[in-house]
Length: 212
Image 1: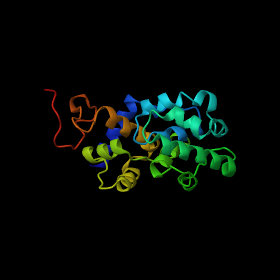
Image 2: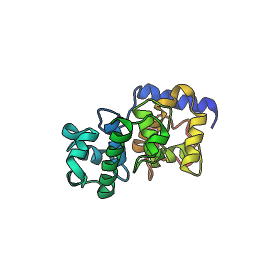
Image 3: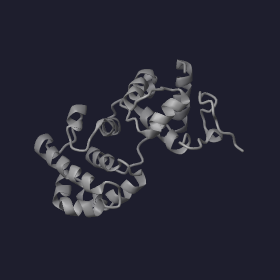
Image 4: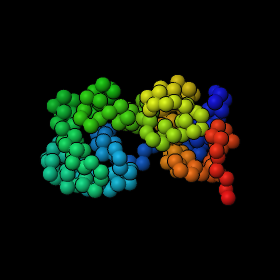
């Protein structure tokens, strides 16, 4: 895909959605971090239901530690891998208080040192909480990058690096959300909604679906 096509794709996404953001509910960087940690193998909707049970009253590192492991586990048991996630969240809260004055660090190294936080989670927090031009490549972004031809790659890291290299600079900070939302609602895995797609004429996917 050439530079002009990519620029037009992101121009259209920007025009349609000038201020994209995550569909996770949060009030500050700490709550975003916890929500993203809980979102692995879970839908944003299910995470929002779970966090609504404790964010309003215990939405700080100190608050979650006051809940304790059993209290947190009880509130997040409706999402997948809840026992492991509860342990990681409790330990993360301890580390944030002991090493970071209760604040979420703004570096990849410090974020990835937290239990249960990998590169993808760190990228989401850096981008959404702090405005860094990072891209967290999940299954939706990996699919869209490859299918459309925007930034094909064989691995998640390869796609991430290529996206950061080829996306026009003026679109980079918001690009994560545009691509993810496009993959979640339009360029879906099994039967992409090509007739409803605003970039179908620019997309290089050869097996586009028709409206019939």
